[in-house]
Amino acid sequence: MLLVVPGFAAAGSLKFAHSLVGQLLTALWSPLLGVQIPLFARLQQRGDPRQLHDAYRLLSKFLAAIMLPAATGLFLLMPNLVMLLGRQYADAIPAARILTLGLCLDAAISVPLAILMAYEHYRPMLIARSCALLAIPLVIFLVPRTELIGAALVMTGTRILCDGLAMALALRHFRLSYPTRFALRVFGASLAMAAVVAPLALLVLTPPFPADPKIAVDKLLWLGYLVGNAASGGLGALVFLGVFKLTGGLDPNDRQRIRELRLPLANKLLRFL
Image 1 (cartoon, rainbow, N blue to C red):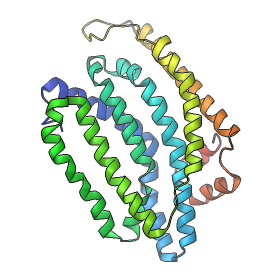
Image 2 (spheres, helix red, strand yellow):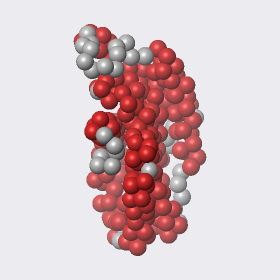
Image 3 (cartoon, rainbow, N blue to C red):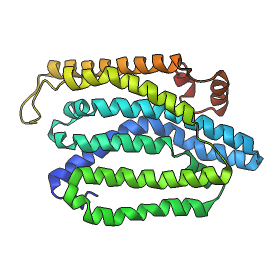
Image 4 (cartoon, one colour):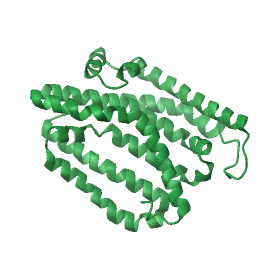
């Protein structure tokens, strides 16, 4: 992608956007990656479809409760984060927003791929992953014309397509069901959070300094802007948690089962969900 995007400046902006979103996503999602395949491999040895169904629904709920509000908040605050961390890459803001939504959604639906790998169903897994080959013509013909936005769309679109197909194949083969109602409640709470954060992020917290990196910025001004954005994100998190709990939150049975799965950071997050 960096080779096809025209110009060194565009390549640098794309690399910055992907690195920024990747680091944020790593902090939220990576702790769960290492436990999925061992968990489903253990369930495969037991041969109990009911346990597989319960584990899939619990992991999907847990990821939805993390990724949907994270995607909403980061989408709204991404322009401010870019101005704080790399003003010279202001042209990467639209691409960073697309990457935020796409990669968070992909992480939220990625559990079935781990199930296919753990249960050694390689044919549907390879079929799903082969869809990534569609990115080759898109990279060659679309990205040079659409630059950063096209690159972000290709990067996220092909990943969602691959993991979405893996999800469809796994749900059909194992007769699993995605917790749609729960995800809709999380989405509704995320919209409530967006209604509070959007006016602050888009109107109140406009960058108080120019995008030109050659112009020095007062450190106190930069720090104050950082604190303001952090406070806005914290307020949004409180709104999300309040609305989420008012609409039902996590069931007590789900809480207990998530604790039994021993997911990383689960006990800390369950205090708030």
